[in-house]
Length: 118
Image 1 (cartoon, helix red, strand yellow):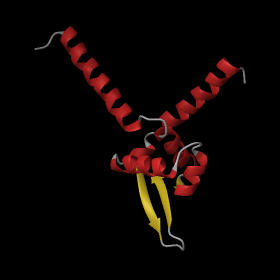
Image 2 (tube, rainbow, N blue to C red):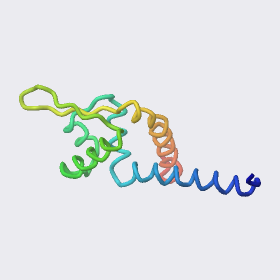
Image 3 (tube, helix red, strand yellow):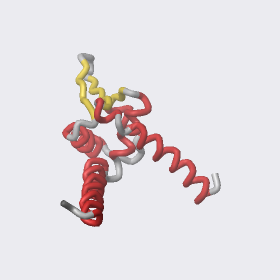
């Protein structure tokens, strides 16, 4: 049987691994902003996300969306329109990030007030 110190160490390691797993999925300059764009509107076209995420290129947005799709955060739907439109929405799993996105937004607004004064 493990003593309390060993249990805490194992639990701590498990939590640290969970943080690392989360950061692996959400890391980079663009992913949180992309998720935020989709989260705010529920469904977004590629071009809408491109307009929301200032400074991202088509190629980078495409790459990041593919990674989010692989990680089951977003779902890609090709619409039968002329020209063809691609739409993205959060999966059920992706929707669990809403609280994190809202907390980051609130923190960012408060941080701006503290640092910039507005």
